[in-house]
Image (cartoon, rainbow, N blue to C red; front, side):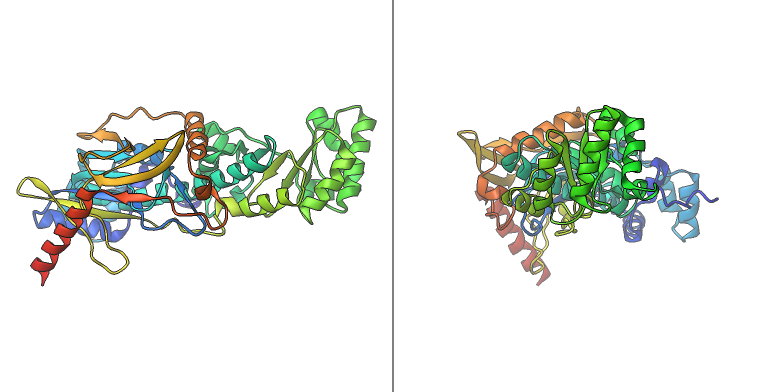
Length: 455
């Protein structure tokens, strides 16, 4: 069976996880002897619908990519077969990152135009990163934000309920399912059903049973009895295969007959709020787990309708971010070296104009709550606390990445400091990001210079 049969991307494959036009430009840069230093910025133009904030995620995977990026013989041979010239193949064979990367720590809220990442390096290095960083940071930020919104609803309406990612089977590929489990945990989930995510990232794993277990026995009672015999006090029974309330009654009877504690029951269909109330009257203190179509909107409706649950298992809506499946992050050149200095650059395209130059953004807090941000030129004095941290300097990793539990705690703390209006599930208000005087003037000067030069 060929190595590519499952489409799995291992560390040595990531060098080729790029778009062809990136390599075409690299070859052009090298053959034109045009390899100036340049700065690229990764940011949101606009947040996805109904998002009052986004939660930065995926930096750890970018760090691993930059540290291990190598073009092996197989990769170089394939590129040669595609027709790329020796100048590019030689450059890639000796590829080594020599630049600077500044980034936003994972678990930090971010808003439009604020950099999640700034890469400054020779353009033949910085250009190559575009596809991978957009993929890793864009997707994980999307899922971390979705997870954080669900966790925030539970904290506001519930009472310490558990949130578990059930979405691997509906994710758009193996890598997406794995990274979604990480991002959801970062965003505030308590665990995942995915065993590989438990091994790779240390995310706690959870599981109950499927309808196939129940259907494979002669009766629901027989299925529950067999499960109780294997798992005892830890058994959680899926009770809606035939009749939800009847299933709850049978689970109670089986636990009594087997002399074990009823660990819990799971509801996966029907009017979940109404059924949870009815089941709660049957199972007493046993945990009630609710799955099927769960997202932040369904959670809010569930609580508003008086639903009762101890745990939730969101799946498809989480890993595919059903209501907003595209993060919309972009990676744009904002400065390029000219005569030894980085000269600001910007796009003037209608609806896609960019702010020029290297940047920093500052967060202003009063009385424990964030008030507004200031997007500024790098090095410009501004009100508030700077948010970006240096990740690589002169090609060396200088950032001490926190563990996943620390990032998760940061997410919860940071969301708690946002205005309530920005945390709303529907129609949140825009959090204010002010443009500094220095950046505003730079944008005006750069636009004037570009229009004079081009016209």
